[in-house]
Structure formats: C-alpha cells, structure tokens
Length: 212
View 1 (cartoon, rainbow, N blue to C red):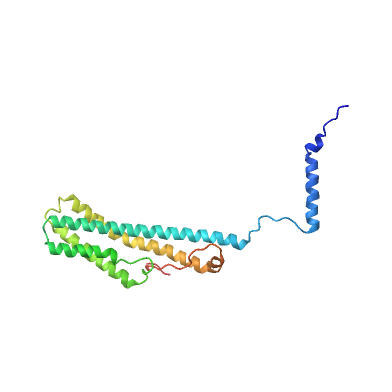
View 2 (spheres, rainbow, N blue to C red; view 1 turned 30 degrees about the vertical axis):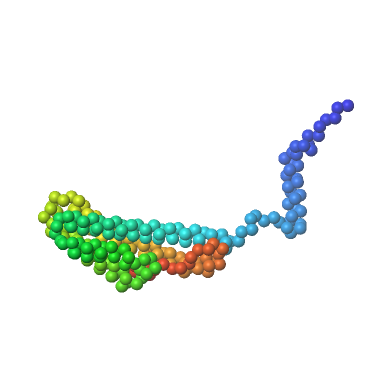
C-alpha cells in the first residue's frame, strides 16, 4: 500500500497559521510578557534629533566663516598685486613700498578669530588697518598716469572694493546663524548635555551685527 505524503504537516494552511498566531498572542497576554518593539526611549530619540540640528548649524557657521576669511585673504592678495603694479609705475620709492608691504602682511597675523570677535576693539583695529591700506593703495593707483588704460590695476581696484562691500554681509550672516545656534543650545541644553552624543555646547561669539 502506498503511503500518501502528509502535505498538511509540510505546508501549513493559512487558517493553521492564524490559529497558531492567536494562541501565541493569548499566551503572551496571559503571562503579561507582551513583546515590545526596539526599546529606544523617547529622550534618546529626541537627543539624536537635536544633535543633528546642532551639527547642521555648526556646519553652516563653519561654511560662512570660511567664505568670509577666504574672501578677505583674496582681498589681501589683490592688495599685494596692486602694490606691485604701483611699484612698477615708479610712483613711490623702495622704502615706502617695503613699509606698505609689511603693513599688508601684518593684516593676517593681526586678524580676529571666531573666539574673540565679540571683543569689538580687536575687530575695529583690524578694520581700521585694512581700510587705511585700501584707501592709500587705491589713491596711489588712481593717481598713476597709466591707470586709465592699465586694465590690471583697474581690475585689482574693483576686486578690492567689492570685497570691502561684502564684509558686512558676511558678518551679518554669521551672526544670524550664531544667534540661532546659541538660542538652540540654551533651550535644549539639559537634553543635549545628558545625551551620549558628545558635542560641544559652547556658545559662539558674535560680531554684534544683530541683537542677541
């Protein structure tokens, strides 16, 4: 006699599966051990979300700062090139060229940084030194008899002037982001400080171009 294979044991029917599932559910309910989803507390989820916002704000601050410094460096380089053009024109002597060159080189070393921009006297001193040089160099360039047809000098003067106009825009943009960053840290400091995500919660200094 041929033995028929018992397909029911090998391939449970949908009804059998539902019945087993119901029995299993009743067992967990009766024992009070209802399985839970991933045991992630709301506080950690919130901390992760807040951390992501903080990191995005930090990135925005860094990008804006680097754009500002890069633009300022380009302006200083243009000033050096303009001085070279003035020197070639023979308007000023070697000693005056050397003195102007030293003043240009000192700009970078005397420039403020992200931690001390709230010390207004430092920013004002840098601005005074930079603006004085810009004024002197442009005056010398425009007084050159060859300026009207020297396209190199004209382009350098325009580049320097445009950079001067962008300074305040960069500072306002940086302060806007920094104010939001500082306010966010103040509001969520308790959660962020208790989080396992190790990030700096130090507030940022401002140029004071906007109200804190």
